[in-house]
Image: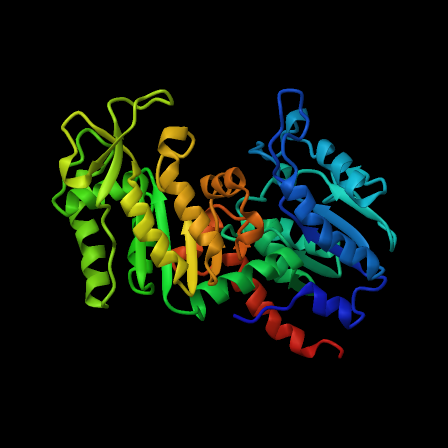
Length: 404
């Protein structure tokens, strides 16, 4: 899918003196005092802002924060803490502008402002055409740099891209698109996917989609328990979805029909209760007792999966293999994580728990690309076309008429 990038717009000198509107993802967690608890998303937004400033543009940045009620301002929904942190990172003040849609906004070239929480604007979530046109009228160039919102067709992510004179992808979004294309559209083989989580139902469509593409499909967590049950193995009182056994079998059959497989754990780590202090025992998967809880894959299974991952050409990873938050049940995830880090293949990882595992084991520098999107990343794995990328692709056709 071809899209116009902001880097190419700047290289052609088209941003100098122009009004640039950047849709960033600044939806950061705040602590009880209303201060930023973790600023990764703010830091990730800086390259696009710097690119626009260095190109001589007048820069406007906006984002959502939390889940505000449209048209109702509450201090807890304000981007004020983000404006302060963004200013620190840029080494310059970043004024926060409220009521900006109809407020006669004026920004001079070389200046940057942060526009208050875009989801406060009535019509934002429903992609209201009138609001979209008003946003587009504020700028000469729209830059979408928020992959985490790319699966939503909202006024600040989709509508504005329809009507802005130029619509393009910022450096963060462009990098996501490149990584996704490399991992799923033109992967180096073998392509191995890891899909883990508590329930098959939440990721069934992802499993079904990947079963048509990958050379190996590793399942973990509660999802693996359902597949164990579908393979006729005992799972005790472990979390599973017996009503989805037929769907799990269909995924396994689809893989087998392509000469691939869903490897079933041969050993597991169990406990009698779900607790950080529970006593862990390693058992063959066939010997799980009626009162056992499966909370991790066993060491033999972990080694077997690690060997497969180390030989992979491409790895897509979503979800830890066990209850990695509890030390006794974290070893399977750690072995797999380190195998991904050691693999010479390209790796693409995404999802909140996955990022937490990457941080826990200190392997972020050894992962090919770490996606910033949660829901957007999952929809890509489902094989869906994201609305934000769809509109940018359509607008890329307009870019053919831009000055050289």
